[in-house]
Image 1 (cartoon, rainbow, N blue to C red):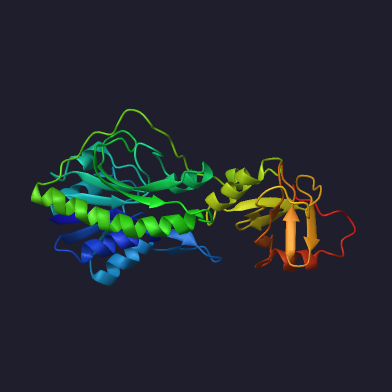
Image 2: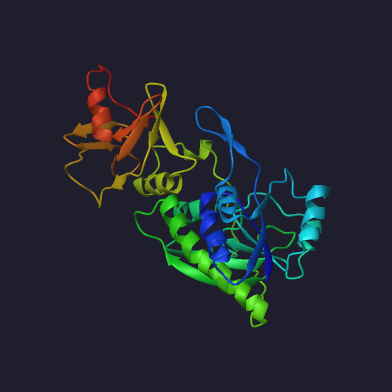
Length: 313
Protein backbone atom coordinates (compact mmCIF):
# COMPACT_ATOMS: atom_id res chain seq x y z
CA UNK A 1 0.00 0.00 0.00
CA UNK A 2 0.94 3.62 -0.46
CA UNK A 3 1.29 5.14 3.02
CA UNK A 4 1.61 8.50 4.71
CA UNK A 5 2.95 7.94 8.22
CA UNK A 6 2.19 10.34 11.08
CA UNK A 7 4.32 10.45 14.23
CA UNK A 8 6.60 12.71 16.23
CA UNK A 9 8.69 11.41 19.20
CA UNK A 10 11.39 8.77 19.45
CA UNK A 11 8.88 6.04 20.40
CA UNK A 12 7.38 6.38 16.91
CA UNK A 13 10.70 5.70 15.15
CA UNK A 14 10.47 1.87 15.37
CA UNK A 15 7.08 2.06 13.64
CA UNK A 16 8.40 4.22 10.80
CA UNK A 17 11.50 2.06 10.44
CA UNK A 18 9.38 -1.10 10.19
CA UNK A 19 7.29 0.47 7.44
CA UNK A 20 10.34 1.74 5.55
CA UNK A 21 11.75 -1.80 5.60
CA UNK A 22 8.48 -3.37 4.43
CA UNK A 23 6.90 -3.94 1.02
CA UNK A 24 4.71 -0.89 1.53
CA UNK A 25 5.66 2.52 0.13
CA UNK A 26 6.03 5.40 2.59
CA UNK A 27 5.22 8.32 0.30
CA UNK A 28 5.49 11.00 3.01
CA UNK A 29 5.69 11.57 6.74
CA UNK A 30 3.58 13.96 8.81
CA UNK A 31 5.07 15.26 12.06
CA UNK A 32 4.77 18.16 14.46
CA UNK A 33 6.60 21.42 13.62
CA UNK A 34 10.17 21.94 14.85
CA UNK A 35 10.19 22.81 18.56
CA UNK A 36 12.67 24.63 20.84
CA UNK A 37 14.97 22.35 22.82
CA UNK A 38 18.09 22.47 24.96
CA UNK A 39 19.59 25.36 26.86
CA UNK A 40 19.76 27.53 23.79
CA UNK A 41 16.10 26.80 22.96
CA UNK A 42 16.98 26.35 19.31
CA UNK A 43 14.36 24.88 17.00
CA UNK A 44 14.94 21.16 16.57
CA UNK A 45 13.23 18.75 14.19
CA UNK A 46 11.34 15.81 15.67
CA UNK A 47 12.95 12.34 15.78
CA UNK A 48 10.48 11.21 13.13
CA UNK A 49 11.41 14.12 10.86
CA UNK A 50 15.09 13.25 11.21
CA UNK A 51 14.45 9.58 10.44
CA UNK A 52 12.38 10.49 7.38
CA UNK A 53 15.06 12.83 6.03
CA UNK A 54 17.63 10.09 6.53
CA UNK A 55 15.44 7.78 4.43
CA UNK A 56 14.82 10.40 1.74
CA UNK A 57 11.09 10.66 2.48
CA UNK A 58 9.14 13.92 2.12
CA UNK A 59 8.28 15.52 5.48
CA UNK A 60 5.12 17.54 6.12
CA UNK A 61 4.96 19.72 9.26
CA UNK A 62 1.51 21.34 9.41
CA UNK A 63 0.87 23.64 12.37
CA UNK A 64 -2.63 22.15 12.37
CA UNK A 65 -3.64 19.07 10.36
CA UNK A 66 -6.87 20.92 9.54
CA UNK A 67 -4.96 23.51 7.48
CA UNK A 68 -6.38 23.59 3.91
CA UNK A 69 -2.90 23.50 2.39
CA UNK A 70 -2.06 20.31 4.28
CA UNK A 71 -5.35 18.65 3.36
CA UNK A 72 -4.78 19.50 -0.30
CA UNK A 73 -1.25 18.08 -0.17
CA UNK A 74 -2.48 14.88 1.50
CA UNK A 75 -5.14 14.45 -1.17
CA UNK A 76 -2.52 15.02 -3.85
CA UNK A 77 -0.27 12.29 -2.40
CA UNK A 78 -3.34 9.99 -2.38
CA UNK A 79 -2.31 7.44 0.27
CA UNK A 80 -4.15 4.14 0.57
CA UNK A 81 -3.78 4.32 4.36
CA UNK A 82 -2.26 6.61 7.01
CA UNK A 83 -0.64 4.75 9.92
CA UNK A 84 -0.13 6.79 13.09
CA UNK A 85 2.10 6.40 16.14
CA UNK A 86 2.21 9.18 18.76
CA UNK A 87 1.64 12.03 16.34
CA UNK A 88 0.51 14.47 19.02
CA UNK A 89 -2.44 16.24 17.38
CA UNK A 90 -6.06 15.39 16.63
CA UNK A 91 -6.76 14.35 13.05
CA UNK A 92 -9.80 16.21 11.65
CA UNK A 93 -12.66 14.48 9.84
CA UNK A 94 -11.59 16.04 6.55
CA UNK A 95 -8.21 14.28 6.79
CA UNK A 96 -9.72 11.01 8.06
CA UNK A 97 -11.81 10.81 4.91
CA UNK A 98 -8.91 11.02 2.42
CA UNK A 99 -7.29 7.55 2.50
CA UNK A 100 -9.70 4.76 1.48
CA UNK A 101 -8.37 2.50 4.26
CA UNK A 102 -8.49 5.26 6.85
CA UNK A 103 -5.97 6.19 9.51
CA UNK A 104 -4.67 3.27 11.59
CA UNK A 105 -3.39 4.25 15.01
CA UNK A 106 -0.94 2.35 17.21
CA UNK A 107 -1.92 3.07 20.83
CA UNK A 108 0.09 1.90 23.83
CA UNK A 109 -2.65 0.30 25.93
CA UNK A 110 -5.20 -2.49 25.70
CA UNK A 111 -8.19 -0.46 24.55
CA UNK A 112 -10.69 0.52 25.81
CA UNK A 113 -8.41 0.87 28.86
CA UNK A 114 -6.42 4.09 29.09
CA UNK A 115 -7.69 6.14 26.17
CA UNK A 116 -5.76 9.39 25.94
CA UNK A 117 -2.33 10.96 25.80
CA UNK A 118 -0.52 9.11 28.61
CA UNK A 119 -1.59 5.44 28.66
CA UNK A 120 1.76 4.04 29.77
CA UNK A 121 2.13 6.50 32.68
CA UNK A 122 -1.37 5.68 33.92
CA UNK A 123 -0.74 1.95 33.55
CA UNK A 124 2.14 2.20 36.04
CA UNK A 125 0.46 4.79 38.25
CA UNK A 126 -2.53 2.51 38.79
CA UNK A 127 -0.55 -0.68 39.28
CA UNK A 128 -1.67 -2.64 36.21
CA UNK A 129 0.18 -5.94 35.86
CA UNK A 130 -0.55 -6.47 32.17
CA UNK A 131 -0.70 -3.90 29.40
CA UNK A 132 0.01 -3.89 25.69
CA UNK A 133 -0.52 -2.09 22.40
CA UNK A 134 -3.55 -1.84 20.14
CA UNK A 135 -4.04 -0.95 16.48
CA UNK A 136 -7.37 0.62 15.64
CA UNK A 137 -9.03 2.79 13.00
CA UNK A 138 -9.22 6.45 13.96
CA UNK A 139 -12.66 7.99 14.37
CA UNK A 140 -13.76 11.39 15.60
CA UNK A 141 -14.10 10.25 19.24
CA UNK A 142 -10.93 9.87 21.34
CA UNK A 143 -9.31 6.45 20.85
CA UNK A 144 -12.75 4.90 20.35
CA UNK A 145 -12.39 3.36 16.89
CA UNK A 146 -12.72 -0.33 16.01
CA UNK A 147 -9.75 -2.55 16.84
CA UNK A 148 -7.60 -4.49 14.37
CA UNK A 149 -5.18 -6.21 16.74
CA UNK A 150 -3.40 -6.25 20.09
CA UNK A 151 -0.16 -7.43 21.68
CA UNK A 152 0.26 -7.85 25.43
CA UNK A 153 3.19 -6.97 27.68
CA UNK A 154 3.86 -7.72 31.34
CA UNK A 155 4.53 -4.68 33.53
CA UNK A 156 7.68 -5.27 35.59
CA UNK A 157 7.80 -4.33 39.26
CA UNK A 158 10.66 -1.91 38.57
CA UNK A 159 9.50 -0.59 35.19
CA UNK A 160 9.48 3.15 34.63
CA UNK A 161 7.19 4.66 32.02
CA UNK A 162 10.25 5.04 29.81
CA UNK A 163 11.23 1.37 30.17
CA UNK A 164 7.76 0.10 29.36
CA UNK A 165 7.20 2.51 26.49
CA UNK A 166 10.49 1.49 24.88
CA UNK A 167 9.43 -2.17 24.85
CA UNK A 168 5.93 -1.39 23.60
CA UNK A 169 7.28 0.79 20.79
CA UNK A 170 9.18 -2.20 19.38
CA UNK A 171 6.41 -4.78 19.85
CA UNK A 172 3.88 -2.23 18.60
CA UNK A 173 5.85 -1.58 15.41
CA UNK A 174 5.54 -5.27 14.50
CA UNK A 175 1.82 -5.15 15.29
CA UNK A 176 1.32 -2.06 13.12
CA UNK A 177 3.05 -3.67 10.16
CA UNK A 178 1.06 -6.89 10.59
CA UNK A 179 -2.14 -4.84 10.73
CA UNK A 180 -1.36 -3.03 7.49
CA UNK A 181 -0.48 -6.34 5.81
CA UNK A 182 -3.81 -7.76 6.92
CA UNK A 183 -5.72 -4.73 5.67
CA UNK A 184 -3.99 -4.93 2.29
CA UNK A 185 -4.72 -8.65 1.90
CA UNK A 186 -8.32 -8.21 3.01
CA UNK A 187 -7.90 -10.82 5.74
CA UNK A 188 -8.24 -8.36 8.64
CA UNK A 189 -11.39 -6.61 9.78
CA UNK A 190 -11.68 -4.13 12.62
CA UNK A 191 -13.98 -5.08 15.53
CA UNK A 192 -15.82 -2.54 17.74
CA UNK A 193 -14.35 -1.89 21.17
CA UNK A 194 -16.37 -3.32 24.08
CA UNK A 195 -18.55 -0.73 25.84
CA UNK A 196 -17.25 -1.69 29.29
CA UNK A 197 -13.81 -1.09 30.78
CA UNK A 198 -13.25 2.40 29.40
CA UNK A 199 -10.69 4.44 31.35
CA UNK A 200 -9.02 7.74 30.52
CA UNK A 201 -5.32 8.65 30.57
CA UNK A 202 -4.90 12.43 30.40
CA UNK A 203 -1.41 13.87 30.06
CA UNK A 204 0.49 14.08 33.35
CA UNK A 205 1.67 17.59 34.21
CA UNK A 206 4.60 18.75 36.28
CA UNK A 207 2.22 19.33 39.19
CA UNK A 208 1.14 15.68 38.99
CA UNK A 209 4.74 14.64 39.61
CA UNK A 210 5.02 16.22 43.07
CA UNK A 211 5.39 13.57 45.76
CA UNK A 212 3.10 13.70 48.81
CA UNK A 213 5.05 11.92 51.54
CA UNK A 214 1.83 11.31 53.48
CA UNK A 215 0.87 8.79 50.82
CA UNK A 216 1.68 5.07 51.23
CA UNK A 217 5.07 3.87 50.00
CA UNK A 218 3.38 1.81 47.27
CA UNK A 219 1.66 4.88 45.82
CA UNK A 220 4.87 6.93 45.93
CA UNK A 221 6.84 4.16 44.21
CA UNK A 222 4.26 4.00 41.40
CA UNK A 223 4.10 7.77 41.02
CA UNK A 224 7.86 8.17 40.67
CA UNK A 225 8.12 5.35 38.14
CA UNK A 226 5.12 6.65 36.18
CA UNK A 227 6.70 10.11 35.96
CA UNK A 228 10.12 8.83 34.84
CA UNK A 229 11.40 10.22 32.53
CA UNK A 230 8.55 12.68 31.96
CA UNK A 231 7.16 14.86 33.42
CA UNK A 232 9.55 13.94 36.27
CA UNK A 233 8.83 13.25 39.93
CA UNK A 234 9.93 15.84 42.47
CA UNK A 235 9.76 17.13 46.00
CA UNK A 236 11.26 20.15 47.76
CA UNK A 237 14.14 20.54 50.21
CA UNK A 238 14.92 23.86 51.84
CA UNK A 239 12.46 25.53 49.49
CA UNK A 240 14.21 24.27 46.33
CA UNK A 241 13.06 21.54 43.94
CA UNK A 242 14.62 18.09 44.25
CA UNK A 243 14.01 15.82 41.28
CA UNK A 244 13.61 12.12 42.06
CA UNK A 245 14.39 8.96 40.14
CA UNK A 246 12.85 5.60 41.14
CA UNK A 247 12.82 4.72 44.82
CA UNK A 248 13.00 1.32 46.53
CA UNK A 249 10.23 0.18 48.84
CA UNK A 250 10.84 -1.82 51.99
CA UNK A 251 9.62 -5.38 51.58
CA UNK A 252 7.48 -5.01 54.70
CA UNK A 253 7.64 -3.72 58.29
CA UNK A 254 11.36 -3.42 58.96
CA UNK A 255 12.69 -2.89 62.47
CA UNK A 256 15.91 -1.27 61.26
CA UNK A 257 13.98 1.74 60.00
CA UNK A 258 12.39 2.51 63.33
CA UNK A 259 9.85 5.31 63.45
CA UNK A 260 10.28 7.74 60.54
CA UNK A 261 7.80 10.55 59.97
CA UNK A 262 6.51 11.29 56.45
CA UNK A 263 9.14 13.34 54.61
CA UNK A 264 11.81 12.77 57.28
CA UNK A 265 15.19 11.89 55.74
CA UNK A 266 17.65 9.53 57.41
CA UNK A 267 21.14 8.64 56.22
CA UNK A 268 22.83 5.33 57.07
CA UNK A 269 25.96 4.84 54.99
CA UNK A 270 24.92 4.52 51.33
CA UNK A 271 21.22 4.31 52.24
CA UNK A 272 19.06 7.43 52.30
CA UNK A 273 15.52 6.72 53.41
CA UNK A 274 12.44 8.93 53.56
CA UNK A 275 9.38 8.36 55.71
CA UNK A 276 6.00 7.87 54.03
CA UNK A 277 2.47 7.19 55.21
CA UNK A 278 3.50 3.54 55.63
CA UNK A 279 7.04 2.13 55.49
CA UNK A 280 9.95 4.35 54.38
CA UNK A 281 11.39 4.30 50.88
CA UNK A 282 15.04 4.41 49.89
CA UNK A 283 15.98 7.16 47.46
CA UNK A 284 17.79 6.34 44.22
CA UNK A 285 19.27 9.18 42.19
CA UNK A 286 18.28 12.77 42.88
CA UNK A 287 18.96 16.15 41.31
CA UNK A 288 18.96 19.32 43.35
CA UNK A 289 17.83 22.44 41.52
CA UNK A 290 20.74 23.89 39.52
CA UNK A 291 22.97 20.83 40.05
CA UNK A 292 23.71 17.54 38.33
CA UNK A 293 21.98 14.21 38.86
CA UNK A 294 23.68 12.11 41.55
CA UNK A 295 23.13 9.16 43.92
CA UNK A 296 21.11 10.16 46.98
CA UNK A 297 24.04 9.28 49.28
CA UNK A 298 26.26 11.86 47.52
CA UNK A 299 23.51 14.48 47.81
CA UNK A 300 23.09 13.69 51.51
CA UNK A 301 26.82 14.06 52.15
CA UNK A 302 26.72 17.48 50.53
CA UNK A 303 24.06 18.74 52.95
CA UNK A 304 25.23 16.89 56.07
CA UNK A 305 26.61 20.08 57.61
CA UNK A 306 23.19 21.74 57.70
CA UNK A 307 21.99 22.28 61.24
CA UNK A 308 18.28 21.70 60.68
CA UNK A 309 16.58 18.32 60.38
CA UNK A 310 16.44 16.88 56.90
CA UNK A 311 12.85 16.97 55.72
CA UNK A 312 11.37 16.72 52.22
CA UNK A 313 8.09 18.49 51.55
